[in-house]
Structure formats: C-alpha cells, structure tokens
Image (cartoon, rainbow, N blue to C red; front, side, top):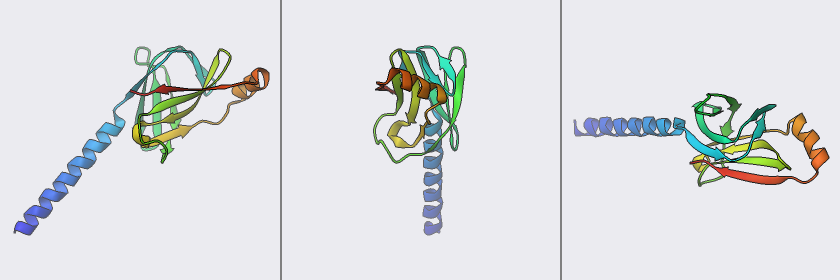
Length: 135
C-alpha cells in the first residue's frame, strides 16, 4: 500500500511539473525594438513586441496594442542557455529579423534571407548584426 501511495504521489508531482513547464513555455517574453524592421515582407514600427510560443512549433511576434504581428514556424534549439533574444541584420536604416532564440534555448527560428533583404544587401554591402534581448 505504501509503495502504491508513493508511486501515485510521484506521478502527481511529475505531472504538475510538466504542466507548469508547459505553461511557462507559452508565457510571452517582451522585447523593446527601438527601430522599424521587416520580416516576411512586412514592415513593423519600432515599439514593444510580445514573443510567445503558441503551439508545438509555432512562435508569434505581436505588438500588444495593435495585435499586428507575424507567426513563424519554430524548431527545437540547442543553442543558448541564457536569456532569449531577437537577432537582426541591419543595412543602413533597414533592419530584417533573422532569428528568434527563446529564453534558455528552448526553441528558435532562423529565417532565410528574403529577396528584399538580398537586394538591400547588394546595394548597401555592409551589414550590422543587432541583438535585442527578450525580457
């Protein structure tokens, strides 16, 4: 009987931990992006954006005041053990989202270079890599 009770308690604890981890994973992170940027041929203004996982392999980046955003397919990430970040390529005054790394490296998105970014890169030549922390 004691063995059965202990087993039940252990299953309950593991289940609660799993539910808690899943809930935390879907909690949004916030980023203050101080420049306008482009992702998937959409341009977004500078401002505060929420980054959250909305499905097993789906990330949503959205402005909380307008709900305008973009949905991206994600993949499990082994990189990064610290804070999450958004990575951008910047050419002069134009910035393009290149990657999303979730806090503790739980998942990530690496975006391919768009045709618009390729054209700007040919014209501008030099690019700067920018990182914006997720909080």
